[in-house]
Image (cartoon, rainbow, N blue to C red; front, top):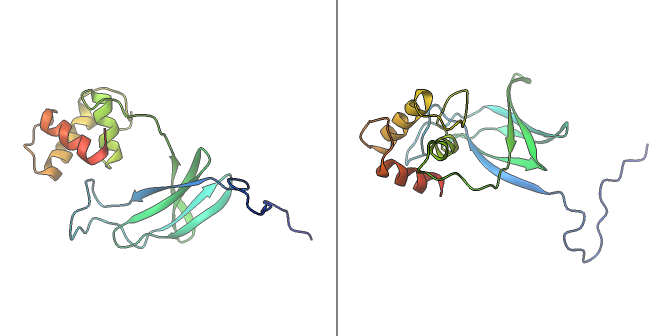
Length: 166
């Protein structure tokens, strides 16, 4: 059987025959927040694999800090968590280069909280305050050593921006 040819290298070719892969750092941890010195929140020894268009492109086990570099090909990849070889959880990992909403509105705050690993609820980024968004903010405030209010003031906006970006 002759193997299928998937790429041909051309001498001195620039940007030809390239498989476009980007890497996204993903941290599996016991509870949300930013990693700190001597942090023990990471989940180690968890088997995972990354799939793209039905093919496995990456596999491994999470290290002590729970941080992996997940490969994304094309629009998205699928990250699978495995136990004894069976898939127990699956996540779509995609790249969105769009700008974040302003940190002054709830939607922008939810985007940043989610980026930092806080659960804003099953509705996700919906722009509505209260419920799980308020709980996520309380957890963020606790992790940052801020006054626990649940509401968002300038101090919280500054910290969200510093930790997750403009």
